[in-house]
Every structure is written in structure tokens, then in C-alpha cells.
Amino acid sequence: MANDVKNILDSIIDDTDNSYPKGKGPVFDKDTVGATYTRTNYTPQTFDAGKFKEKLSLYVLHDLVSAMMHDEVTDLDNMIDSSIMKHIQNDYDGSCYGYLCAARDRLKSPLLTDVVQEVDDATEDAKNELEDTKDDDALAGEINIAVLLKDVTNYDEFREKLKQQVSDKVVNDVSGVITKRNDAVVFDDLDEELKKEDKDDVDKETQESVIFKLCGAIVTESAIQKDPISTEEGLNRAIVEYCLNEMDYLFKASPKVSMYDRYKI
Image (cartoon, rainbow, N blue to C red; front, side, top):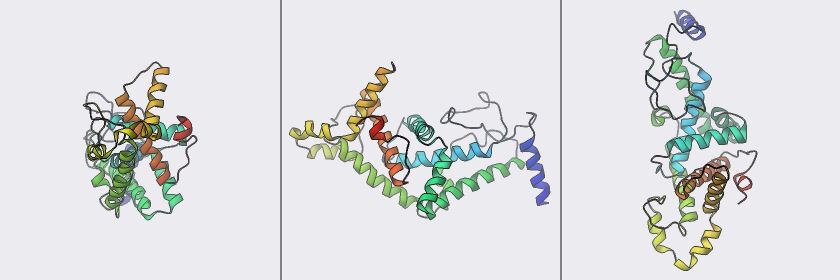
């Protein structure tokens, strides 16, 4: 019976005509990450296990960056996704899944081993569900990382440590420079830090702030490319880039060009 089921699944996946909506949602790649899909705006495609693993891996990396930003990422999801994909493509010529696997191998980490295994298992589960339904919307929705990583030992503890350590570094980096205004990027505890700062130290800290230097470089680069952005957007991008740099450091990854060299800061 098991072989019969396997043969049925293999025949569904290998079948190249579109008479059956193979897979239960769109195939996601770098160009479609973060998009919202409905029955009317995509064509069902053959389920691609590799691309599905890539989507899941992107969600894991996104979750880690969100934790570093203290989960205050309202309206920044697409920016985070595109920044991650650009970083992976430009600096590693690889994939999000490959990035996780390489980190697992370098660090000999049981936790990352479990993360990668959960991605593999979730992909296999999605493939196996093909036998149960022809509902092509079932995999089109958002992926719940908490559910995906429910069996990963101490992932939540790891995430909380990231949240505390990296978000504190961000707050400390910019606390002497960001002022209270409606369009400012503000972490929960940033206002308290601002109250403690001596106004005379603001100019000095502006010079020392990695994130503000990065923000200036990003805004300038966008202007040169004739695609100008606001300082607020530049600051958001700078914080995301800073978090990606922290993730590289955490995973002992070596990008082709470091953040400091790329933006000459």
C-alpha cells in the first residue's frame, strides 16, 4: 500500500500537464516572496519541494530578523524579505535553505540541525498532502513559524536571546541621535534611553552611530540611482541591514563584501 501511495504521488508530481492543480499553492521564489495570492491571480504549478523549502527557510530567517528588531516590524515585512533575499543572492550566491544548512554545518549546532529538519519535514508533509485534496489554496496562506518550529528544542529561548541582545545594541547605537517625532523609528524602550541622554553628546554620538552612518549611505545611494527614499525609510533599511550583519556574525557566515565595506562606514 505504501508503494502504491508513493507511486500515485510521484505520478502527480512528475505529470507535466496542468489538468490537475499539482501542489496546493503557488511556487514561491525571490520575485514572489511576500505577495498575496488568490485563486484569480496565479496559475497552479507543479509542487517544487526545493522552492517550498526555500520559502520556509526565508520565513525562518525573517522570524530571526524580526526578533532582533524586537518584533516591531509593522509594515516592514516586504522590506525584510527583499533585504534577506538580496543579501543571500549577492553575498552567498545561494539560497536561504543553503544558508541555514551551511550555518548548521559550521556551528555543529543541534538547534540548527532541528530547524533544518523541521523545514525538511514540513516540505515532505506538504508533498504528502497532495493525495488528500485538490484544494490549491491550502498552501497559499501565511506560514506560522511557531507551528513549523514547535518541536525544535529551545528555539523560543534562542529567539528571546536574539531579541534582547541585538535589539539592545540597536537601541544603544541610535538612542543619542533619534528624536521623538511622528515618523521616527522607535523601539519600546528607546524613549526611556532618550530621556537619559545629555544633549551635548548628541553630535558626538551621531558620528559614532553605525546605523546612522549606514542610513546616510543608503539614502545617498538611492539618490544616486535616481530612486530617492526618505530618511525614515533609510533608517528602517539600515536597521534591517544591521540585523542581517548580526545574523552573519552569529552564524559565522562570511559574505563576499561586509556591510562596512559595502557602505564604506
